[in-house]
Image 1 (cartoon, rainbow, N blue to C red):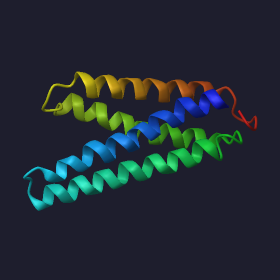
Image 2 (image 1 turned 90 degrees about the vertical axis):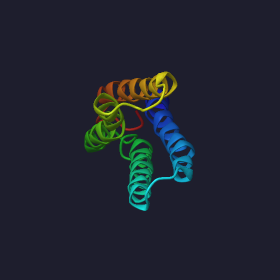
Image 3 (image 1 turned 90 degrees about the horizontal axis):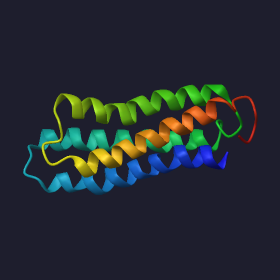
Image 4 (image 1 turned 120 degrees about the vertical axis):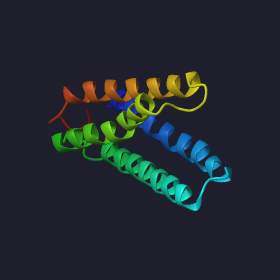
Length: 126
């Protein structure tokens, strides 16, 4: 279970840290108030979804409950798929090697954690 927890938990924690560190610096930019509203809504949603996902990883998934795996799949699509969808449709607007590399590592770790966890569903303390 430690490997599964690490592969799922570390990218989620990294997403929270990056969202808070990088996202909040956007408030200093001269954007309209409405854009700041959307930014705050996105940040709170992303951080909240990551926190709920961490609770699932260290609670129901650890107990081998299959529904938690499915919930984490959906959360992963929202968290990591959203980044790649945005990148594919509108891009980053700045050099993207570092953010894309970081996001690729997080996405691959999360998917690997889901793959490993799938084989242990129904077995407590995977």
